Image (cartoon, one colour):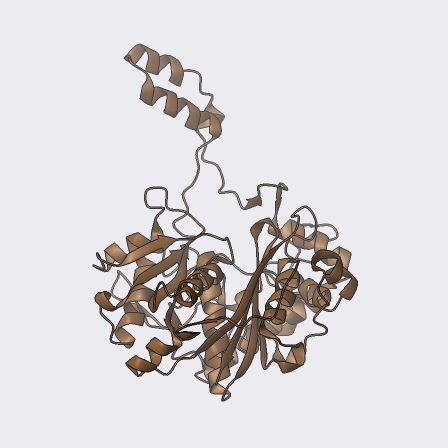
Length: 433
């Protein structure tokens, strides 16, 4: 695919991310069990605006997304706006699976570059705790027909067609529709193809938890993770998934989940089901300067890519990253940090191999491979295996976390990536001065 060097900027200058924060992330059915995705998203947006002394009249757009849909309220962005009394704020929703809030940030960036907006909030939210238990297809079909039946006799006749098994609730599906496999099953295929050992996966998982625990201990996350006020009157400040005292030996004791005979993907080296939300305050560089804000940093470039999901389902970042880096005019050696979403430790290991495989990258994109990633720059404050993965919010977490760390280090450049369903990959290059 033709890609040229092209920094993201418009008449208002660069695209600034002025601030970024998230709720603490919580394991499914724990602290946020009584909150839905709208509640969590509104919580993050409200705090972001309060911290930056903004009123609804100053926000031109709210662009938000989620993956686990709320059937009666699929328009998540507008529902969040209305929940906060932001009645006059334009809003629209986006879903791109695990790359959702990479896309909401990219969409706001495009609007800023085009001059359509100077200030907006992007982000994402998800509540796995609120996922609806589906009905069987047979029961759904009969209930649909019953609703259109004209007489009681017709309704009874339709209901009599049901068998006992049709009445049982169905387990929520996490299967990739196009290939009929879960992401864990696809990761098992990938690690076998790319020669990733169980030891390497467990090493990456242990590093994720250890780095996240250190980040919390050293206060690196204090600014970017808000305090959540819960319906029961309690508060939550920390993520409740991070293993504060991770021990490497414990990972080796866990049994494979997706291939019990020859597999290596376990609950310990996979990201858990999680609830949470994240939000980014974005402005044109000119607008931020006029209002006296010091941005966290800027979006230098981004790219999305896709490959056939039947093979190497989660290798999309390997194709997106070279395009984003080419547009930014950078090489791996220029980077201060690399922050990769960790759906699975095996996926991260495969992505790292792919980024260094010139034949693989050229055959897919026509671009040169990036090379070997310096592991000392990788996910230095932990990743999704430790924090969890509320699908719609993960991109906002990764972007915000990378920018806060760049700022803590006095500036630099970061490559952020995420894999997503359907063979999609996202990559975004960030810079901080």
